[in-house]
Length: 342
Image 1: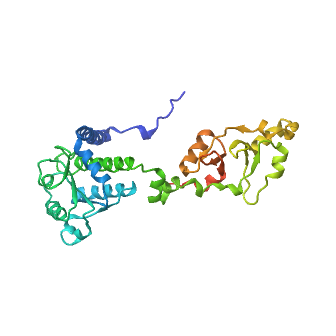
Image 2: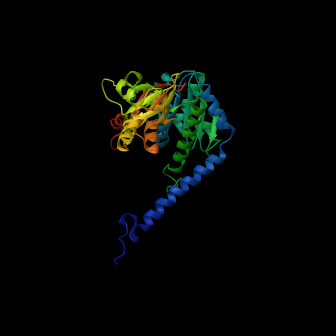
């Protein structure tokens, strides 16, 4: 018997081994620095979080070179998680763009050395406006640190570059701390996926966060019936115009959802030749306590429920467990993201 062929994608030729070793070593070194920075976070991080929680204006993120590129990403993360933020190039700032800064803002300045000339020129200007400043820097004894109200020190960081020159590990650490600030503030402010969807309506992520109310079949299109009716009576009285749902929602005397009966349930009765059950109360053959989703759910929740429970219909209920809509698997298919990611 011939041995099963190995997956060639898993085999690393000897000639590439050193490249892979170096790549893994660089990633490990950056991970070690992130762990070290995480352990060093202290009360100054909490002070920065409190400063952003008290924010009345916007976070103005600023940095030069690679730190500036990281700053743009941090500003984008803040904006998408509920904290207004903009990026301000420090060189442009001292040539007139500082006019966009207001005393109600907070300036978040990024510099590993803490000696970036353009930033050190900018900070005194914005402080004269009454704007508070937070610095993320590698040295608590730097010029930038001495000029700022709050200083988050990353400590001495050696770059992953063999010569210790190219900003790599330091920018990774800055980005991680910026993400931490943005996400801690958003959690304390009770920022929800629904809030996130407001700022990110496009792409596959936007689709996943689409409110269920925009996808479900509304109550006036549902097939609703009382649990006291027979199966035959229910099917005779629940026809609806438009798209036909494969499920009937059964309610009790209070209007709360008591059960669900699907076309598949009917088919099973007929296939088993249980014709007499057609004239029994539908409560005897319905599925009690069916899986439901709340009216404030999002599209991603629906996909997960359908996949995990392997069902085709999910009732949407309000806080009193009264049906307000229905999601059918056919409704979901048209909303599923196509290839690619956001």
